[in-house]
Image (tube, rainbow over all chains, first blue to last red; front, side, top):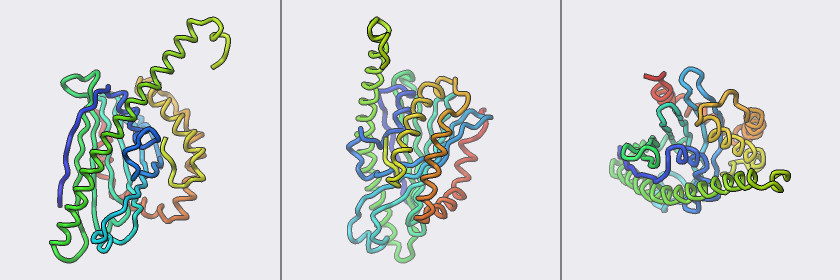
Length: 198
Length: 81
């Protein structure tokens, strides 16, 4: 088993980050073309805890070098099952994901957490990510190690691109919210606009 | 918003996602969410998506994943300390 772990900070409030997280892989993000679809399977607020639980299916398309596909097969589409838990009372988002394709050959489990940064809880958010990668394919330990190593490196590259892409989403999101607020204020201040419907 | 794995569901997904995002930021995070007003849209989207999942055999893969995920639910859905 190999472990990939990192944490990073975003200069946005937890509310902004947790909202934008839902559109992390939308058109505002040009850095993660390997995520081609994100579908919501179920969503519910737990009446006892107030936690929002969401199940999503994430579709990725990313090619792999030949030595990897010769072991894992040539499929370039992979599916990830994710459950997330948003606890608004303690301001915590937890995302747990696992691969559902090739799951008899490799097991990837990831947990990501977004929480307000201790240093500046109102306008900074800490993102921490931990993934455990275990190759299950039979055969030499050496092959298993190389497959795990390859997957960890992929994780590293994708995590970097993921952060860059998410920064773009956060920036756009703030801009759009600001524009909506400006428009609303303008509407309230202007008599003509007040009578028009926007 | 991101696309659906089933292109025929994109339109209804977009409508649901937009509804959800508004509800999440304006109501859920502010603690004023009462009912899930996006539920009717979700049902339409779900109906479209479940057909696609079934025809591609993804529904059985999901069943296994859900079984594997029980620990996460137990850990993260705990009642508040």
